[in-house]
Amino acid sequence: MIPRYFDIHSHLNDDAFSGDIEGAITRMRAGNIWTIVVGTDAKSSQSAVQLGSFYDAVFSSIGVHPSDNKDDHFDEDYFHRLVTMPKVVAVGECGLDYSRIDARDTAEKKRQKYLFERQLEFAIKENKPLMIHCRDAHSDMQAILDAKKREHGDRLRGDIHFFTGDVETAKKYFDLDFSVSFPGVVTFTNDYDEVVRFAPVDRIMSETDCPYVAPLPHRGKRNEPFFITEIVARIAEIRGVDSREMAETLVKNALLLFGIQGGKTETPQ
Image (cartoon, rainbow, N blue to C red; front, side, top):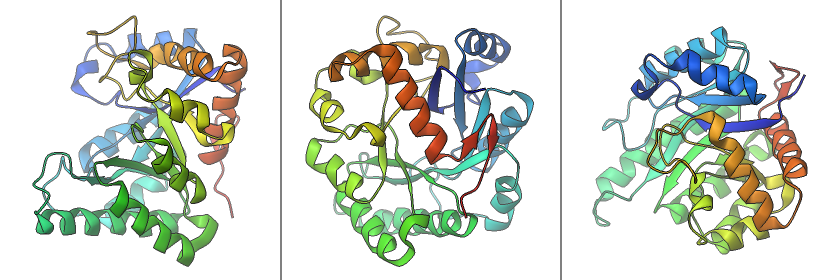
């Protein structure tokens, strides 16, 4: 069995879902939706794994966010124990975020790069794709990925989540064999329509990033995986294709990148 929709990046482990996780999962099942619950530190990564082990429609990604954690600590032994769990499909949310720092803060940039590169090397070792967070740091991110791609080849792969860059930025990621995923912002702004149209059909993903940034017509509400239907419909509209066909393509892309077959994971050799 495969889903009708795939939300590749959610935070069902967030406190916003306290007391309503069963409701959110029930609505997902009604819509035949699968999701990847994402960790941003050791604790939330563990809860992501626990949700994946408990619910058939949930997979998990484990990692340390670049700016939500102000140290460079990545406990590889701890995360190795998590990554061996059957439904862990990616490493992250990891990456670079310069959006809230002074451009001259070289020490903070160095800290984030070190933290990200440790997780990148961990993903290579464990043969998992990366779930990348990148804000106002695409030049540095692409320089790192380009160098590591030459070193590791096809073992380095992943998705740039919540992509809000331009076409030229996206093209550089596509040249590195990375995909980009689009969240609810595409439903209430036209700023990213050109990128959505330009992206190769096998290099795009759909995500909610819930509980944040709910799509229209749910703006102002807590976001949840069930709302992925609105995002997929808008992606299809922008690209001028049938919504059901777009949903099938996005599911196929997610299953391939994250090594999921029939609800189980497979690690490429």
